[in-house]
Length: 294
Image 1 (cartoon, rainbow, N blue to C red):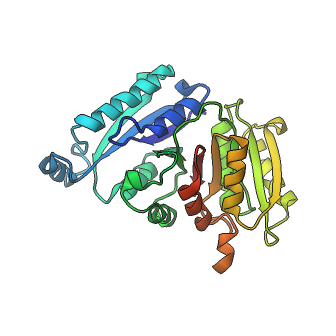
Image 2 (cartoon, one colour):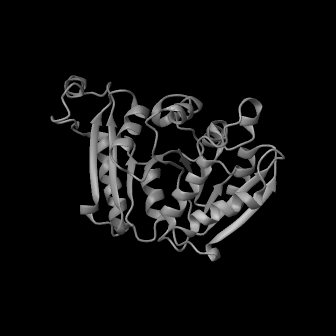
């Protein structure tokens, strides 16, 4: 089944990490549909035009005229896709004036557009602050709490040649199972990538055997055979630290996990796949894309 990806585009043509990740990850990109989205800032040079368009009805034009950096970024993104033999008729370009803040605008478009993933670019050693102009921890928590965040978020670093496969953090929660389901769906026709189911045993979670059995059943439902599935359980106090370490050691293209994890409260939230783990990984993970699944 073809996938539809929403790829956000900044004003800097040198930082198209989301587009570069998509180009490097998929074996045959021409099978999928890509929407390139640029949100025009309210303090751009042509502010009068931006403010006018912000209050237009949905039936009226909602895009903004692009010049300078944004136009170069979109042109560069289309060029990169073209190098992968990606047909122009499989690319949609959307521009919109910032209405509620970039985070909310992107999440709203993702929720309303029937996308399979929202792809966010980022520098490998930076946080999301460069894109959204907010502290990364605040951005992460906004995404996690926001009611309209119902599409997986891919946060992509600068692509590194030779990386492949996906590491999936599992803890037995329904949310982590949805992460497994998302990975299975995305990789169902990407045979060059294998999947590692990764469980951190900290003495308070379920048994690994039970967790793996449920996750494997989900992957089998996407026609992913056992030869592409690896099971790995380790002991650790910090789930985020263990995931980060394995992601770097294994040379994975992506790490996937649920945004919320188990529903334990208080101190336990630091040891499971919960919002705290996601926020920590957004701040720390490098080289590997992070797939956050609601």
